[in-house]
Image 1 (cartoon, helix red, strand yellow):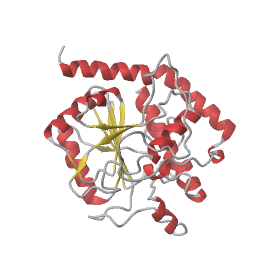
Image 2 (spheres, one colour):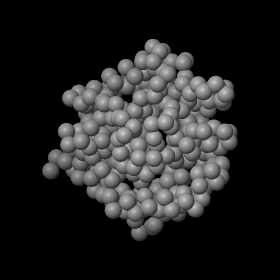
Image 3 (cartoon, helix red, strand yellow):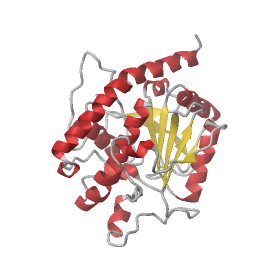
Image 4 (tube, helix red, strand yellow):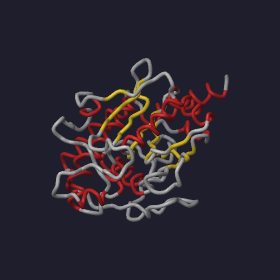
Length: 305
């Protein structure tokens, strides 16, 4: 068997163990039950560790609690895996792979653990595109990727990962210039596939939480949101190329209709998780109303389809 075939089998095996359809459908019911009892508004304000370029070793958890895992099945877990990439501009927050890391990663992992029966890894991972460990994770996220650059080996590896059963969520890139950068990388990876706009009627937006047309899902960063609190402005205009006013949710499917890539353009879901404890209004308006519901929907939909 070729190495690529081995990795394909490995990924499908991990996906089946960590998030097969039957366990996750049970988990969906558990989430609904938990929310009926507690409500989003009763979240305590957990805040992850420091923001900025990561060092070596484990991330600083801040006040996000640790939880145990079943020692009999140490790998049967959903893991928040963040994809590490290189940028064409000097890497800094919002133009680097560590955008919103590690607070977003920790907070979303905790909420999944807290409100579902899904077994969740308490330690989110950062994985390089060329790291064979990538194929251990059926779900990876990439944030702030408007200036991403991919080598041909990286593009080839990502293509094999996606076509072997993997899924990529791209978040927090704004304006036409950043869209062009992400689109160019996407075409390197999947040259024969095109992203399509997902209508709000798509089951993904209603799979667990109902996100109707009249609930705008655009989320700016915390500072922009608070500065424009009473204006109704939820976009960020400080991005090259214009085209920041409307959020776009675009998807790439394979030839069988399986969701491979989700592109959330002109919105910052990661800040909704990262900054959930920073401001009560921001939490109510964005974190609990938009960002966590969309994340739960997308994760559960992807893992059951």
